[in-house]
Length: 49
Image (cartoon, rainbow, N blue to C red):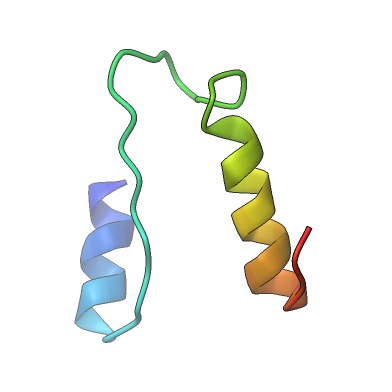
């Protein structure tokens, strides 16, 4: 992940980074999972879910 973040900074791309402590590999089953999907839909499809 650090390499990805560094690359995005280097090429001057705007991005959001959410770090969820206390989880395993992913946070899909956490309270943040549905928000992450909403953000994906909004940014990729330019629509509100």
